[in-house]
Structures are given as C-alpha cells and as structure tokens.
Length: 256
Image 1 (cartoon, rainbow, N blue to C red):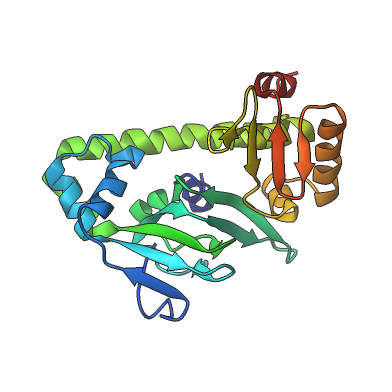
Image 2 (cartoon, helix red, strand yellow):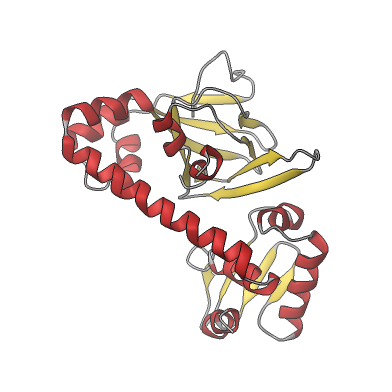
C-alpha cells in the first residue's frame, strides 16, 4: 500500500515551512492538550506519564480558510488531529487534475503512518474553512515507544484498524454505485449533526465539487443523486444544509 493511502487514515510544523502570518501556533501544554491527546484512539490507553511526554511535544495550530497546512513533499515529523473546521487532502493526477483524497473534519486525524515511515507528505493539505488542528510530534511519540513496549502494541493495533478501513473504502469506491457512495458519505455525519425526532440535520463540510472528487464521481452526478434522493423524500437539500427526516429509512435504502 502506498504512503498516500496510508496517509489518509490518520505534520510537521516549522517556521521555515509555515509563515507566521498564515498559521499561528499556540504552545498550550497541560491540561488542555493532554486531554485532547487522551481522546485520540491510539492514545486512549496510554499511561499518564506518556500523555505528559506527548503533550510536551504537541501544539495547537490555527489556519485561516484557504491557506495550506502543508504541501506535498514537505518533511513529515508528526501528525494532525482536526479540532474544528475542515482540512482537504488532495493530490494532482498526471493529467493535471486535482483530486480530493480525504475531507478531514473534527475528530479526524491523518499522517501518522507516513510519520512512522519517515516519508514526506504525499498530499497537499488546505483549510476548507478556518480550522484548528492539534499537531503531535514524532519525537515525543518515539520517546514513548522506546520507554514502553506496550505503547508499541497500541499503535500497531490502531494502524491495523486504519488499514482495514482503507480496504473498506477502496471496496466502496470500486463496488458501490454513485447513490450508495453518496448515502455512505452522508451517513458519516449523522452523529455530528443536530438530532430531530427520527432524523438529523447537518451542514456539508465542503463544496459539492470537492465532495464529488472525494467520492470519485462527477459534480453533475452528485447533484443529480442528491436531487433524486430528495425527490424520493429521503432527504432535503438547501445549499450545504442537509436534512434527513428518517435515518433508518435513509440507511436501509443505501444497502439495497
């Protein structure tokens, strides 16, 4: 599996790469950063001393909409957890077209596999909206790995889960039709949306053009699919605002 694919499941921050006018970094130690790190799946069973070490090697970064978090080829010395806003991870194909590989929203993290491989970033990352991310440094993680073998097993298990998720994603993009892909994508935001009696309301994290690229369908196909789902009464669309009146009915339709 290529570094680009491994990258998606889950940054380096240096003054030489990021201009201060673009990205402002806050060295917020304990308890805020420590608490945020303890919520990351791969660190949930880490010991208190390990969390302290990792927190000391981490920082919160704020990025304005449209600005880069990093570019393809930049050295990767850590990974990122999205705290708010959204980050678009993209690459340019040989024919010059840009493709969205991942849309990372609050709770998503990326680049840990590439960090362990010692590879540079295989993708570009841009803020789709004003975003706040937590940078977790490789040196701090390496220190914990050297001190505690159990910590290594935790990370291996987490990366194995990510590889399984990648396999599922590849199957989705190759075996499912456009409607199933769209429904599967929208279901991802159900838990993060505003719950109604039997349904949910939420806002799409990116433009329809970006989402279509992420799902490997054309923008026209995405718009047509959303319109068809709306005509069937399965959802309502108002710009980026999505309303699903019956979650179970919507989910069951996607498995047909």
